[in-house]
Image 1 (tube, rainbow, N blue to C red):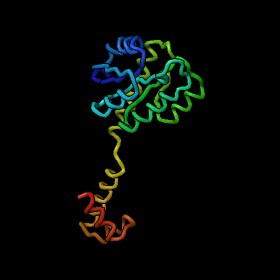
Image 2 (cartoon, rainbow, N blue to C red; image 1 turned 60 degrees about the horizontal axis):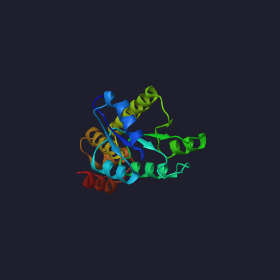
Image 3 (cartoon, one colour; image 1 turned 45 degrees about the vertical axis):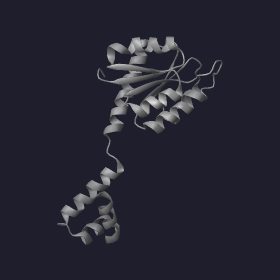
Length: 177
């Protein structure tokens, strides 16, 4: 975890500073964003290992809608990023909704530093697993390669083994090189 880069997203500078101070001994760097727009821009520009995202950004807001929208923006910018959601006005329904929409964990303010550190550690681990998982295209390419090798480069036999027509196999080979 010591080489991880974390993004802390909260409109309250004191919350950002407190989270950064708690996480600093455990990570390489903590960047901060005061708004969801700034956070989405940073995630597009830099590679983060986890994010800590507040759920409310408007004075008096308690519904978490801004945080859910920000979560969707972060997922669009980096679908592999582990995101820990944070709010002072949490309820079970908001936590469930946040997890269904791609959040990795949910903490209430004020937090215990040990819980925050553990949640960020788990989010970093999930990010790493997602980034190193093979894609469907990788699996398809390796399966085609194995079928061709097994049949000595015979396209007809490899296609039959894969359940494809020769033309479909040729299209995939042309597409993937």
